[in-house]
Amino acid sequence: MVHLDPRPDTPTADLVKEALLDARELLQAEVELARDELRREIRRAKASAITLGIALGAALIGVALLLVGICLAISRGPLPPLLFGAGFLVLAAIAAVLGYSALPKQPLPATRARLEADARILKEHLV
Image (cartoon, rainbow, N blue to C red; front, top):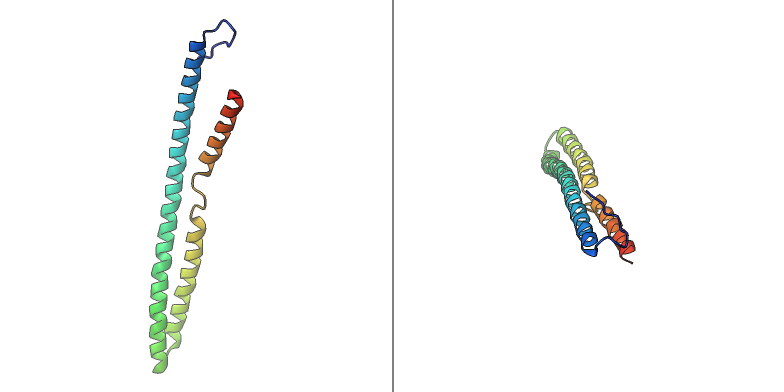
């Protein structure tokens, strides 16, 4: 990038051309940074979805085993299915908490901060 000397004898057209080129480069850099951040967010969302899927599966198995335990409580030997069911429900709760905590709360925070800073800098230069 060639920077022109903003002396009074520098043509306005050249200064405008340089400003447009700088703005274009800035925009390209922002788009690339946003893409990178979006890729990271998607990876985190995938991991969160997998963990939440495990939580759902474990919860379904736990509920099924608890129901089996209740049925067996009416007849004989309810303790093993109840313990397995409770264990799966605990596993489901842990997986659900981990999956929920991995979800992005505010998407693209770094891109937002950079764009706000860029806008603030542009305002200062234009004033």
